[in-house]
Image (cartoon, rainbow, N blue to C red; front, side, top):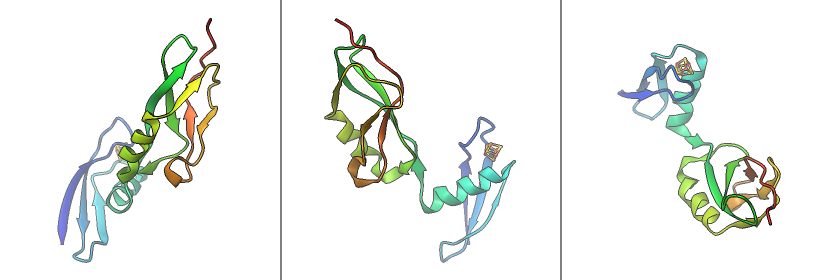
Length: 123
Ligand code: SF4
């Protein structure tokens, strides 16, 4: 049996979790969580960790030269750098509306890249 300590990042309480794993890797118990979301977080983090990705991409013709974007859902943690690299080569032109889909199916993950804010065209 192995014990793993981790901090739950689901809410600002930041509960200190202790996870007991069997030798076969299965999770025996999660303790230290103040709510059920902490249990779910620990189990997912140790089996299939995912994260929402927020970033910016180039935009031309707008008041700013970077447009904030976010993934449409969480992506595997191991794919974060691949997606960041793909975003580095993307450029859009104003105007853009908040929630516009900027890229569909980024890196074949079945997840889209969405504009986090609107940006009007400027002259
Ligand atoms: S276990 Fe629950 S209360 Fe504690 S940090 Fe996670 S979500 Fe927040």
